Each structure stands twice: as structure tokens, then as C-alpha cells.
Image 1 (cartoon, rainbow, N blue to C red):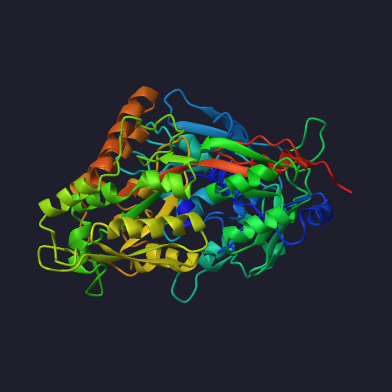
Image 2: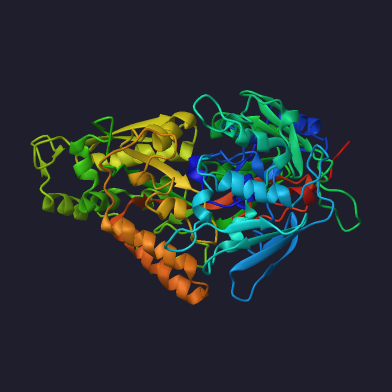
Length: 586
């Protein structure tokens, strides 16, 4: 989901840790006996939105199973490792990287995978202004935002050249590579509006056999609201030490369920192989761990962030303000946002909703990242401080205890999140209660994921939301912190193809944060980079475009039928799925 939107292809592997659960509601023993095939049964909360890796804006998605990039990130060591590229060479001036592909790479249709596919993927897809995607921003280098020059040397070698040093350069080599021989004509041909046909290519109505991939698995079947089935890609490049082709597991099944409560029931019934353990389920599952033959893995603090944010966009679309001007004035008031931060009882969220299995998240960078600034203290629960800030800004209370602004308007706003996520729904209910103690009326409404995404990305018609971003060790996130980034959602610039917005105002502090992220990407010295991102975290904490809430622990329950599990907060249980094997096949 949008809540899971970081930048690079290695994100896909991280997201596999979130894709957990299965099918039937029989007894645990009976269901376990049925699932003794060479497969893994997991789950997702909603149907896939697209089978097009470039256009995807959701997590989880299918692409961690179906595609690979030139390199990947090992979630245990955080080291960059070869994938489609066998090795790479970096020039002494750090401005050129030459990747050399493995010999004999093939697509799932048996066609050769060559440097032509790599150059096509970058130049014609990710860097194509007519193709809106979540990756393009990450390729912009330096203050000028120059894009790299990408060219073919020969069938196996590709040269990436930039104009100045760029610390996250290697992360850009992790994005999925797509097949030129299938998709090139969808770029060259356009529809009646002049848009590339690629924009409507490989939707979820596409027959699975037409989706050509290079990852360990390919699509076999998709039944709306029921399941997605993947089968082993016979042309996948990776082999084990004995020279046998991988993956070892023949099939992956995703059951489509609509709530985490249903996921829990299905896991306990034995019809699935893993579940992400939310705090409310931890004690129950811990008591069943030995008897039911599964293991609960704890990877420590989860990567990513969860936050509440207000729509600060002061622009208009077709003459109508995106946000009611009365409310916009509140949302753009720094002390109003600080008051909200002080009024949210995060210790209560940790104790009641997370059952003690979490800690406050104070900045935009994941706690486990080496760039996390531990000196940023965040906002402790202090309702009196919140009231003090509001009164300082001219807010008043009427006899009924309702908060009014200095023009007599009742302070009231709509808060949304994605439905089906019980943790976020519980957070929203508590925040409604916490702010109610300040005299603020919060109208909390969980929405279907596709409706939520449309509001945040397309219509820009929202007031406040609770969502999250996926995270990693690398702090560079231009699509969030560059002022024209496609996830700069608290003050979003319309993306290509969307209706124009006039009168959008970019604050000086937004520009300063953007400048720091540019500087951080240019600096290759780790200690100096830390100093830059420390300052960026301090600014975000001061101006609160996102009010960060709680960082849960990364917990997952996995059946003991798998050999080779190496659990981590960054990769989850199935990041190395191609190397896992099933021990109870009959």
C-alpha cells in the first residue's frame, strides 16, 4: 500500500515479511495435514491493484516474487549483493558504474535477457516523463536533479554515468528490470489521448501467461477476492551449491483476506504458513507456539514509520480550494500541529494497542538505520502543553468545552486510514478520543485502500490521515522530501496526468529539508552524511509535516515446516524464499 512506499527494488523483498496467511477454517491438525505440498501459503488484505511493476504504488505487491534488479540488498548484512548483474565496477571518480550481467539470463518465456532490457527499463520506463512512477525521483542527482546517462556497452555490460558523486547510486540498481521485447511497442504506441499504451498494460485483468518476468516465480492464477497463485519460473538464473535450479518451493499461494482477525483465525486453523504477529495476538499465539508447531520470530524494531498528517496544500483545483480555507489555516499553523503531537497519548498506544510491543517513533528515518537521530526526543504526552499552544494561537473554548478558532469556528476535521488494518483503526479511535479531550471533534473513517490511495494521490481531497511508509537503512527518499516528489503528500504537487492545482505554496522549511536531502545524497562520507540527516530529522520534528506515532516490533509466526528461515526486520521470514525448502512434503 501507499503505506509501504520507499523507493528501491529491494523494498520488494522487505515487503514479503508483511504478506502472511492462508485459506481454510478447519481444525489446526486437519488443515496442517492438507498443506503438505511443496508450497507456501501466505495472505494479503486486498486484491492486487496492478501487475505492472513500474506503475505500482502499493504494498504488498507481487513483484518481490516475480522480478529482480541488477543487484539486491541482503537484509541480514545490509550489504549489496549480485542479482541479475554478476558484478559491477565503480570508477575512481565515483561517476561511472559498469554492471556486467550474468551469462545466459532468460525471461520466463525463454527469451534472452540482455543489456537491451536494462537500458529499455531505465530510459524508456523509469526515466520517461510520460510514465508516472515511484522510482523516477530516486534517480535525480544533486541540486540540479540531473538524471544518469545509461547506455549499452555490449549484450552483457551497461554503463551508468552521473555528473557528480551520488551516495545512493547503488540503490537505483535494485529496481525491477522489465522485458523490452514485450513492452517496447507499448511505449511507442499511444491511445487517443496521446498517452503510451504502457499505462494500461499488464493490469490485473491480464492473463497470467502474458506477464513475462525474471524472478524466482511467475504468475499462474489470479481469482479476484480469492487468491493469487505463483509457480516456479523454470528459467530463473539462480542455482544452489550443487548446481540445482532454484527456487526449491514449487508454488506460492496468496489468500486474499479482508481483515487481520480473519488472518489470525486462518493461521490458527492451520491453513496457512505464516502470519504477521500484531501485538493483540502475541500472547495468544505465544501460548500455542510449541503445541501448534510454529515459531514466533522477533526482529526487533520494525523498519518504516506510521504517522498522522494534515493536508497543508493551499492550492485550488478548478477554482475550488483543495482544503476548506478555515481548516487550512489550522493545518498550516505550526503550533496547531505541535498541539496535536502533544495531545496524542503515545504511551497509551504502546501499552493498550501494541500491548507493550513497541516504542515511540520520533523521526522520519527507521530506528534500525545507522542514520536514525537518537537525540530527537519527539513529543511526550502533555495535554496541558497542547492547550497552552492552542490558546497562544488565539483558539478559545466555549462553555461546552469545544475548541473554537479566533473567528469562532468549531475545530473539527476528518481523519482517514485504510480499513482492515486493526492496529491503525484502533490508533484512529484513540486519537479521536485523545483530541476530544482538547475539545476537537475528529470524524474518523477507515476507507477501502483504493479509495484512500485515490484521495491521497489523485483527488487530493482529504484533511488528515494515518498511514505509513516502508523504510530501510538508506535515508535518501526524494519522492517524500523533494517538494515536487510524488509522495510529498502533506503538500502534494499533482502528478503527470492529474488536474492542475493553482496557488500551491511551498514553505521555506520544506525547501530547507529538500536541500538537506540533496546534500545528503551528494556526500559519500558516512559521518558527514549522518550530520546532514541529523539536521533534516531535527527540522522534520520541529515543523511536523508528519506526526510520528509508534514503531512496533517486527514479529512473525512461521510454521516449522520450512528449512532455511533467517528472519530479520528488514526482510521478514521469506526474503530468501528461493533458498527455502519444505520438510513435510508427501
